[in-house]
Length: 488
Image (cartoon, rainbow, N blue to C red; front, side):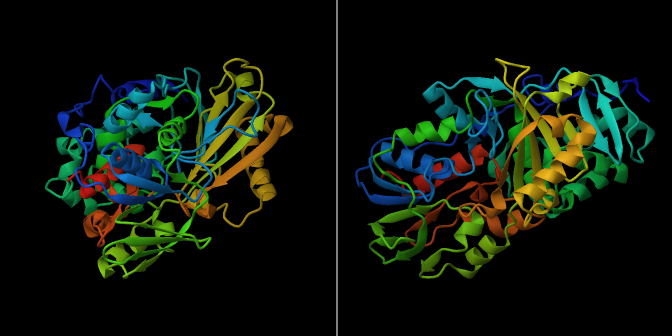
């Protein structure tokens, strides 16, 4: 079944080609960090920032540095929003990301904060041991440098390329160099890509239907290929995230928002969900769900799209802005974590990393590096329809379904399973979904309206950035909103 690789590339080489070794999508000055406010304001204002995710933290931090009086309102009892590291109730030494999974060395704005706080970056390494695939009813354990007989109808060349070679051939080698210039998203040749879905783009480059299915079931960015804007895919996924080597923060990605919030502990009001925002002309009144109210001269709103729909604005938002908020698609996203007494995949000398077309989606394995034979985690990452499938199911139903499927791939899972944690972002009242995920045509139709201010009310959040669904996009959006208020 397995043959010597000819044209295919391994996962390791695939990842390297997005970093310093390059594929032609080399780092350029156009991806310099977002420009912070410089100098102190001569006209300090009272400003309310709503939401202590990365966008709200970046806006508040920047405005405070410029000398403005800032109040930061946050509905949760913690900062970070959808940047959230899960530590409890896992065994000691185990943690996993229930939200934003990784940074990239192309995240120049994030790097400024990461360097400021001295965090240790851990490269997002690929496993040396075989990766498991369960596709079309077939299980395949694939070692680095091997190609297999993939269970799809592929051309002779596609069979040799494998999933990562297919991405190289049909996406990386075909994208215009301008994807490294996000500020030019509304100019040719980029803007025309918004009206093409990822699926249609792959087909136009010559990909077979089998190749499209293989990419869909093995690549995180292809969860909804027919509903993904080609422009967003090109700029956010490839021009930005894959423009350099990815990494995570040692100890958890939420260390960044937690450290940013420490600098503003005196101005953050936690457990203060907002229900109404009223622009009175000379000031803006913000009312919380508890009935308490706050006033300021300017307000920056960084709430996720579906939460934003529930806010009562007075005067009402413009029709184009309301339409943009209602129509911009949000990706369904969920994570299911199974803790096991030991890493059962080691019995077959596997990495634990698994790609499937089953309801469990992709599996990531986490081991305690201080005790590799001790407790371990299997994380199921669900997006799109796979995430929707667990809506309405009890924890017991989800747990039973997942264990039954995973047992086919990693025998011993049921026997050694100790606990299950489910994070469904669609049912989180302060998120109501994952990140924005523009459908074909949505960027050109809605992005500028999402960014636009409404009187004294300004808006930020990853959904207001062309760098959608990224921590970098969130940070840059907050700084953009801060610049709208300025230092004058």
